[in-house]
Length: 403
View 1: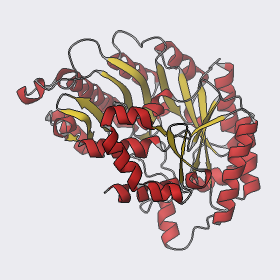
View 2: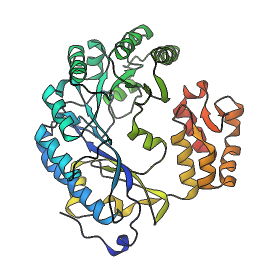
View 3: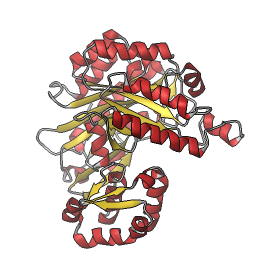
View 4: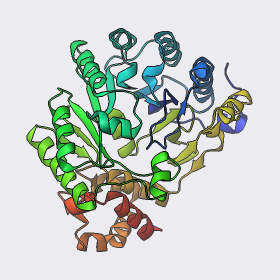
């Protein structure tokens, strides 16, 4: 059912090219480190939730998007565990989002966990137009998998990888974590070797971060979580960069590596600050139109009850989106662009935001260049090797400098 567009929004219709993210917050069990919007044991609510997603999508098309064809540059099913959905549920969702079929050549990713992936599902995904699988392995050690609270085993991870390979998937990715409790650089190197030998043309490697509200966060606050020392983390980072490079992978974003031609199109949209629309619990969006030429953000409720109420009352979060000022948009462009290893190109920023404003930002962050954290190279501002090791802290420093 389509919501009736309020007149004040009807006249503000704007652009219609963007990346599309669908959040599927269902998990068999929440992991000990996870602070994403996800819920375990609520599989019975999947079908009603899909109805809500499609209702939100219809409202966005009716109210927010301009007349004419919608160009979705990429689509990503994230979670949660999207592979937990059965085939009928996935078909209802895909056909509702793309009633005329998925555009050939559009990157269409789905996150999967080894324990819920089957050859039947993989074949079905391909027939629907899904053409990229992101497999959440995290580790090839049963000891570390149990520590993380993962459901699958090392054997299931290996079997899932073999399914993907035998299924003829060209574009697929593995997720790996490091800095785990009790993990040594040698143990991480063994996991990394399995990833590099898997045949995956893309992988992501994330250093464990501790969120206060998670089981790991509680254990850390009680002094019961023994994390590797900083020198071990730095050694793991060195191993990651050197081994990936030798294996022919491009380190194109702080946590992402790909063979040529296999960088994730969807995630690049975020880092290039291109428009994206997110549907579902906790989904965040960034969109530019006539009412917000520098872009606007909105975020959906993070609980099922709040999301259902929003859909039932047509009280969509995007109706209350927050426009960015030119200064805020430029700050976001720097913060997202610096996640890329090659950095952010200054020329296009000058063309978009004006030379005086860009130069003012560069003056404010010049001490970080002098300190060896950032560098200018061939027209790009990027982190140095030193700066990339402390990226999150560095970005907070930049935010402080630009405030």
